[in-house]
Amino acid sequence: MIADKIKLYNAQNNVQMKLKAVLFDMDGVIYDSMPYHAEAWIKTLAHYGVTFTPIDVYENEGRTGAATINEVFERQLGRTATDSELTEIYAMKSRIFDEINTITPMRGVANLLKKVKESGTAIYIVTGSGQKSLLEKLDHNFPGIFARERMITAEDVTKGKPDPEPYLNALAKAHLMPWEAIVVENAPLGVQAAKAAGIFTIAVNTGILPDDTLTKSGADIVYPSMEKFAEKWEDLLLAGK
Ligand code: CA
Image (cartoon, rainbow, N blue to C red; front, side):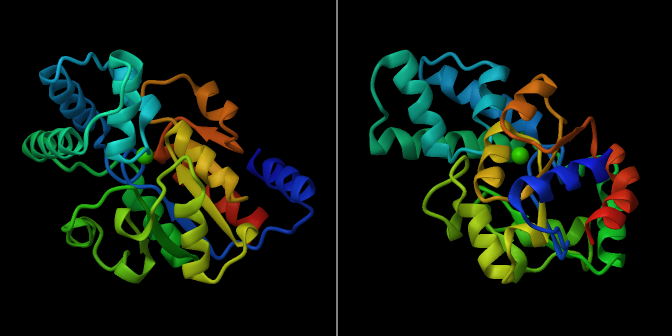
């Protein structure tokens, strides 16, 4: 199945995949953190008189905080947020998230990261998150897997997903062509960003949206979990390395 998808990608792009790096999104891929982001967004926006549903959270996943706030403000209040509102709302959302987040790695991810590392494939993180403690957290949960020079965070980009900039930056940082990497994403806007950068994209549907939201965003293949993707790693290597 994955071999067929890679063949199709090669034919459509007139390239030959030569896998050298896996570019991992973080929330909803490495960490099971989306339910906490959802709760924090819903509570915070309710405080500002704005109704935000779990579906809204997952549909906006991948955007920067400011873009998320402006999207819902425009939809419900007919205006964008002021700069001070943006600062206040994002600070409150971050505070609530930090209070409730229990930092649970996604099931199957440790096994997958071990296999990717052992295959000699480089491991990158491409996230819209700007948390200062990010690398320490990753190092604590997955010792020896990640490095700051192999991370693209909020600090490294001016435009967030769905713009391809974060993934184009990762390719530039790794000195790779699009067909020398794959992306692992869980969100429709993240998939759109990766595909706009020309990269083969595996979606893992760890959230609450139907699979076809990921397919319609351009995902080359959709798996139901990181555990399932980990099972397919050897097939991927065989077809793409
Ligand atoms: Ca994500």
